[in-house]
Length: 86
Image 1 (spheres, rainbow, N blue to C red):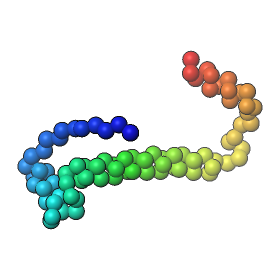
Image 2 (image 1 turned 90 degrees about the vertical axis):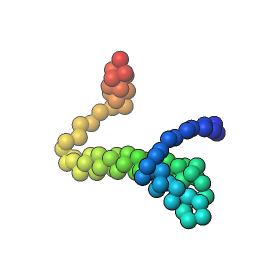
Image 3 (image 1 turned 30 degrees about the vertical axis):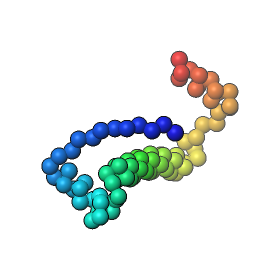
Image 4 (image 1 turned 180 degrees about the vertical axis):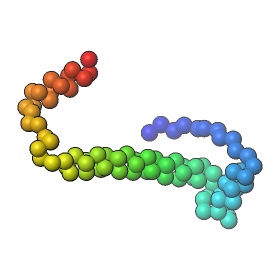
């Protein structure tokens, strides 16, 4: 796993907030730990949004009446997908 060092500049109220969140009085030992946790949470949020969107689309598909489906062969699906790539 590659490790990347990044520099982030913050000031004012954001800097004060971060300072209160780390060290003896905060929830995190250091700023890096805090930033990693924020990134993990944001990643989880994005993944949850993606899952929820997919779940919604599947719910709509499964709720559609049987008469709205058109039978197709595997070859028709393959051909349709190939034509979309071109």
